[in-house]
Image (tube, rainbow, N blue to C red; front, side, top):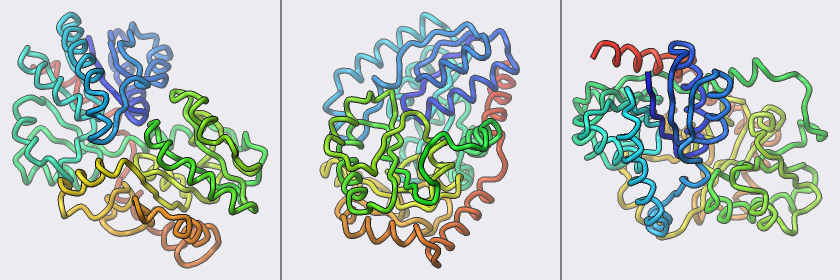
Length: 381
């Protein structure tokens, strides 16, 4: 069968890659066109699939209201190109991996032209834009939820195609642990290593990385390691870390290795907060963005949403500290880092909270469940 897969960010590339592997196991003759990154490309090569990459995620990830407006011309061009490419390819299934701002607009167009739509990783409608549910009912054949409370949310809002499949990060982390060797690829001591995960978008790096560099400068007893991403290019890291101290290093495309060999972490909010928790690394969550984008977000986000980090959202309680915008001060970063680095009640409580979150997420197998359901749905229509 023919599959058209659209992922627009680094996390979507990871989950899209694992989904491609699951599809290939069930449909070895699958033909794929995709928007994604290096991990999806590698998954296609591993499976020996006939696959074509249409767009790379390095040209797609825009975050925040102001940033989207700034790049609107490029986004609209990508939408036009995607629509024409879909009609030319005529896939049996279009699989949208997160990236809802772009993907739901494409899904509406695809539905109008009789194509089947499968959305993997539900938009966070419980946080904002709940009104999208009415439109999604009309255009999606399936919506796959990865957070345990989402299925009930959609059931309460009469959205039958929504199904909870488990969180795909469980599979990604378990796969890494089963494949990696015991030896660390890094020369520094684990108990003196602090991982810095500043985000996967250039605008995130510009807002937080210089301040994280200064944390390293003040804490010379620790070795700080930035989880760099080659898709963003090394020049941006070099630019933002021109005067880096000797105890700060950048490693590229080794985030899981870094988390597996770190004693603590400072993490820009996003998927990385849950990844850090699944590796059992105590963390401080921080976030800083364009003030206009943040102000608009605070106006439209549901008052019921008290947190921004996935760890706290899943647990529905404060497990990790969130330092957002003006709370992300040097003093607060220093205090919270010290609190989680040494053995104390706060660190112990965080690790207990991580265990609770892992239990709430259940077992692995999300990619397999999604692949199986997509193929069965196609075959029975």
